[in-house]
Amino acid sequence: MKRSSTKWVVCLFIMLIVVLSCNQKPKEQPQTTVENAQWWKEAIVYQIYPRSFKDSDGDGVGDLKGIIEKLDYIKSLGVTAVWLNPIYTSPNADNGYDVSDYRGIMEEFGTMADFDSLLAGMHQRDIKLVMDIVVNHSSDQHEWFKQSRSSRDNPYRNYYHWWPAEKGDPPYRYSLFDAKGDAWQYDTLTNAYYLHYFAKQQPDLNWSNPKVRQEVYDIMKFWADKGVDGFRLDAFQFAAKDTTYPKFPEGYEKDFIQYYAMQDGLHDYLKEMNEAVFSKYDVFSVAEGAGRNFDDAHKLVDKDRQELNMAYAFEGVDIPKYEGYDVATMKEVFTKWDQEFADDGWLSIFLANHDQARMVSRWGNDSDAFRSASTKLLNTFILSMRGTPYCYYGDELGMTNIDFDSISQYQDIAAINGYQKALSEGEDMGLFMEKLNFGSRDNGRTPMQWDGSTNAGFTSGTPWLPANPNFKTINVQVEDSDSNSVLNHFRGLTKLRKENPVLVYGSYELISPEHPTIYAYTRALGNEKWLVLLNFSNSDSSIKLDYIKPSDNVLINNYNVIDISQGEISLQPYQAVILKIQ
Ligand code: NOJ
Image (cartoon, rainbow, N blue to C red; front, side, top):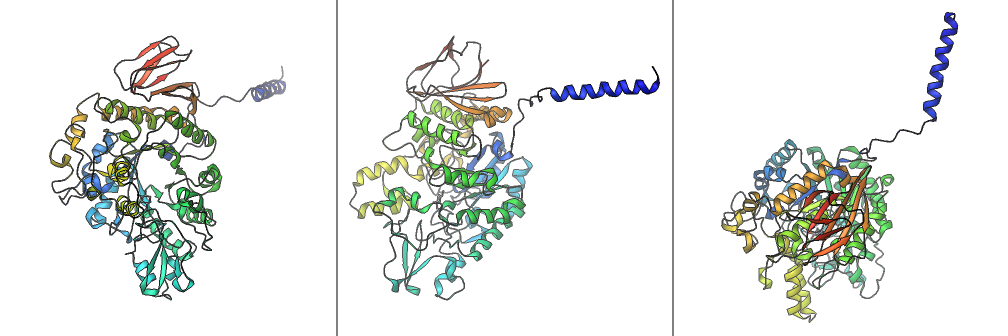
């Protein structure tokens, strides 16, 4: 052949290959490639209530230096981010959720230099820091409020919501923490009432005022410029208010979220905040509360909305009541929320936080016989669900509720004012105290149990809240050296989650929804299929699934044994296992 015809043959050959390869099915993505992967979806968040974590100077209150002392411990847990409850200057009516200076550090917690060292220490260890932003309200000791209340024509007047007394009584608004349940507080100075959805020391900021919004964005930028990695927006779903104050139906306070959350303007504020702050930094954002319904929640967190990255819904965490709860409800609620956000949006997974009693006492069984197994089961749940897990300090040890019987032992403003309200309304106070004993937030705020020494090694002084007397057996030192401890099981779970994207991004499917005691679900990604089995009862229970084989790989187990036969698995009380299905 001549040279030119050889060229043609080569060209035709190449074209043929191109055409053939175009006709082939697109190559499958590698199995672990995940669309929309984000570090905050992969994060395992450890929540620290700084007041109760570690006191470094003996004043009985936890502090930033205390947290710094424990950074290696935090790293050893396998968590990748820390959410700190508020650490700003505060008169502490609500333990820091009443901020009087958003750029200052609470005196009891330390200094800005301590904060800088803490942040650097976290970053050195590859741990992200999430700050709590409390801007539905400020403290009544904030300079803005001092100015605002000083006269009706003060430039800060419009930073808050006022109702002039000459207009008569303000339309009833329920307050969550007020001793009378009244969200309007009369102020003699200007003969007007101000609005506070929480305690009267927490006046609500007026978000319809652009100056307020700008102040908040500047505060957030101040912290973002320091290098923090995320913001948790406290009570933000309540920030927008309908200031025509329509009359709400009798008894609305039982379902106040339907009336207070997501009022007009809220999404505009979030979009503006996103534009001003989130879009300018590598920070993530999470809202406390997910609105009134799925639609509200989607509007907060769906990707194209450009508002927030995630939210935490209360329906799950609110399930256990003093009267108990049913695993069927748990399955239904968590499955419903998972399915609703399977394709768009992202949520948090949590069973406890500083507003709840202890996880194992509410959701598990804190008796000596079952505390360890049931805490491990609950941790298995949190760390194997879709959504970003939030683990509350002390739950990695199985810390339990404390047994207070007199109101004088409580420190929480919600408990103390709630008691006053119940008393004035003639409630059955015996029952009230029993419910408080079970559900009070102080249960979840007792000092971290580090070792068996005085005050659980939390402080050399007098702790602001007593350590739970069970600290001699439930503490970091004891559990560290026990390979079967709740603590080491927790570490095993974080490792498993970090090494396996199936636990983060895999689909979730509820299995055997009708099973009375076992909560079973699969997580699947590409070729991986994992089965999670959680026996939520204090007796043996078994489940039949034809695909189960004795040779299935057991990835985590809170007992040393497992009873699997072809098509069936028997679980001991509170046994929790994750199997890799072949
Ligand atoms: C929600 C916080 O989690 C809670 O602790 C606080 O009391 C209220 N918001 C008021 O800020």
